[in-house]
Length: 107
Image 1 (spheres, one colour):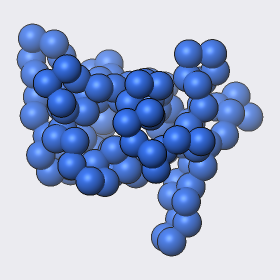
Image 2 (cartoon, helix red, strand yellow):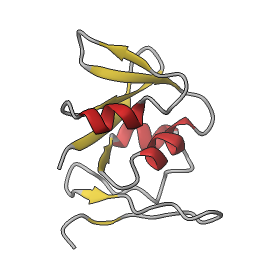
Image 3 (cartoon, helix red, strand yellow):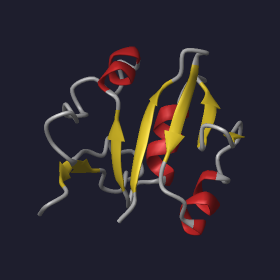
């Protein structure tokens, strides 16, 4: 399974990277504001309100790693995203009106 990585960019954008998979490319293209960076082989998004949440929702059925530095900049994620340096986690689907959560990918 492809691992999606979400991190900060020094230019102030949110970076999403993953090994090439046409289905993941299709998913990422559903998010407005995206930009492909061919040299770096990643997608970037503006740090608009709710952008990280939109990214997580689009990839809710995939294994996603969020850079701890990015977690610190988004208080809504703080406390809900484990330290991904030591453990791999996947994101379960977000329920309408719910807060979602994280579970061990190995379950």
